[in-house]
Image (cartoon, rainbow, N blue to C red; front, top):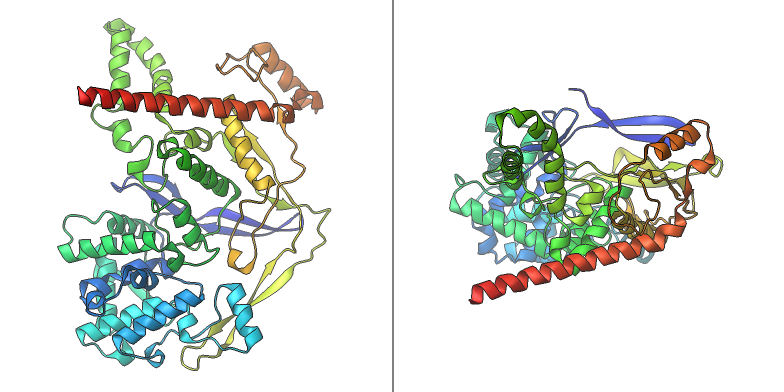
Length: 533
């Protein structure tokens, strides 16, 4: 299957380029949840491999031999920002091994953290190899080399025993035979690994949920790495970095080692999930861990699961064989009701593996009449690892629109209950008050957005137009036909101004939330009383 378009880049109102890609989401059992393009595509793991490259650091005994703490383990898994704390921990790792910066072969570059990079440039300071975002990984490799007696001068060579241990680790976790994994040199001079997307997903699941056939040392190494990343997310990335913010916001429920940019919808969902979990962890599921979904695959499809319960209810309602057609007709309705009853608040609006999203966002595009092609060009440079200076021909540029450039935002929400619209209003308010940054490059000061001039149009096809009614009414055919007629004729009266309902929707959400919390407390009290008796 060919790659699918996952991003479009416009210059003004003209489509300049399309970016194709592949994506795969699996659960803890290896069951595919989402697939885009060809999940069997072979590509390089790049920095996402770092937690696996740190496994031999622990299984070889090096981490314990050199008294590495979880902070140092986290830095070994990091693409850090080169902030003062990152640099100091990398220095301590090398000192504990009994080596110096000269043993590192990752090269030097300015810190990713722009404030620190600017400070160094103003002060006339030159970056060291400790500022390299991969210095923790390389320090871990040197520790492993020293522990197993491998050649320190060639620790980054594919043939070195350290890299052979790492290659075996990638093979064990990804379930790809050792001999079939292709390698090439990454930007920091260490080998990197090309494996199918399916194998990458399998490796991540094996890191979080180590299979029983892994030996005790490997399972303990997995637990230590996951715990270190969750405990010290600020070391895995840094200030304003996506990995760090994601792990901090989810309070250890997610481990992240990614390089993707965030989306408007994804950022809003994450903020609302954090907000609701701050009130009660039961109010919002954790989409990254199936065991923490409001409805797991086992709960839906397993023994005594929702589907079995629905089948039993259908047999109770229609016990006779001649009522089989009635059972079929009623099945979807009962199944939908059962799924909705157990789905968390955020997933009701944004979707889950079992429910489609009610909230759809079109691409945010630059307003052509308000932008005349101006952009800022930023510089980047690759570092030659031998000379520790800028590599010939390795300068690169990237372009960003100036601050204040307006974008057009267009979203549609359908079939949402009034309290769900209230939740959406809270999410939109976060953008109206500049509380959620978007995209990559936030460590460089990018990504601050503000939602302004929000216009909301509303059409209710139900038999009542009173948004205070919480019960979902049946569709009024005459209202629906009138709406469609006006819509076809570009009649603006097809909609009414929804801004007057914002306060009411938010109040309904708060009331709904209070009802759920009270019900949860009553259930807990009932269970407590039952246990006491």
